[in-house]
Image 1 (cartoon, one colour):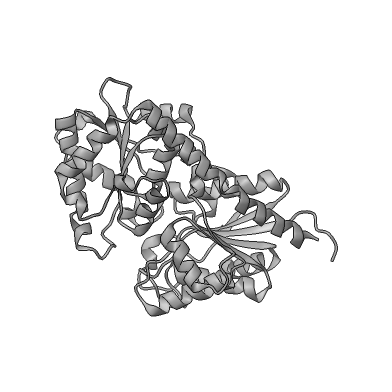
Image 2: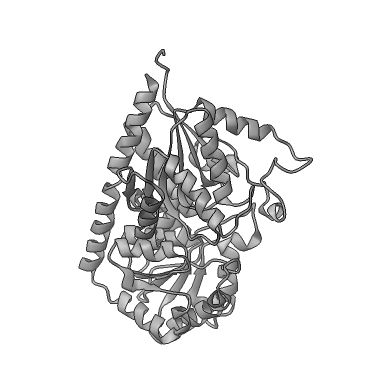
Amino acid sequence: MSKRAAPSVVIDGLYGIHSQGDDAMLLALVGGLRARIPELKVTVLSRDPRQLRHSYRLHAIRNFDHPPFVHERGYWFYGFNPGQPRKHLGAVRETIARADLLLIGGGNLLLDLTHDWLRGPLAWHAITSELAHTYRVPYALFANTIGPFATRFGADRAGAIVRAAIEVGVRDRESFDLARELRSTHDAVHLLPDPALRLRPDLAGAAAALEAAGWKPSARPTIAVSVRDLDWLEDAAARDYLAAMTRICSRAIDEIGVRLIFVPQCTCSIGRVAEDDRGIARSVAAAIDRPERCSLIEEELRPEVTLGIYHHAQAALVTRLHGAVFAAVCGTPALAIAYLPKVRGFLRELGLEDACLSLADLQDTDRALASLERLLSTTEQARATLRAHAASAAARLDAQLDRFADILRRREI
């Protein structure tokens, strides 16, 4: 076989949904691979290719997701229902067929909380992994969280994906143990930190975003707050989540004397309204009696800029996983809400599991306030230690990026 001009990789994950966490993992992956193979051709499967092209100058094509998320209800993937265009399906197939490597990740992709034959992330990645297998293109899992599973069929389907991968990279201990159960060979299963830890904050961009939100430096400590919709979660405690967050934020202002900056981690403007964290933040802030102590980030930001906002806070109260990840990068102590196992799993890997509350724990406002007060007293030395710990964890990703680069170089010959 003659040598090609450049190797190519296809990256398949939940991209194009205006999620800071997913985009951060994507940027870390692409940046790490291109540092090793500058000429690498990258194609991302995305719900909103224009966002990736405009924001990050990445080549992207349409994936199987519906253009507006609301149209997904009651339907299979876009293009699999009668009367829908199918040209993008052929483009996905041809792109994977020509690739040297398919990378599936990162994120909580292999779970069946929303699952059907042709609906949900697990079914989605079963299709793309099978396409890779059909065209003899190796595929690997990158920065995945595996599970939880609600059905035996979901667990079996995830097992088939995990077993056929040439390498499985997971970001929490539970996923690591589960992946080893699903595979007969364990040497290709790796427990690695979240790749977003590799990003560095854009402090100038963050300062401009904070100024636009009306936030100014002051003697009062600032808590960065990440809220999200949890109505989709079948957990009784999830129904009381927003009321509990509102109580905690109100009392933190009154009793601790803090200011709040609400930081959106997902601004899904083309999707289901509730997926946009800004709307959830507005509803919480509107229920707080001291609006002058609340600032809301309304613009869509790059992940590096959002990272910088956490740098300016003295503590964080976060729901989305990557609120905790971003805070750790900046050395900002965070109290995290473990609405799914992946949140607690991340904090456990950093030795910070004590800074994690379950949804049921969140109902104990006094406990949450005591935790926030303790975090606000964190010394600068302890913050520096947290930053160093996060940076050390991020460095462990280099070995996996080296392996991906070796696979691409071998396929190139």
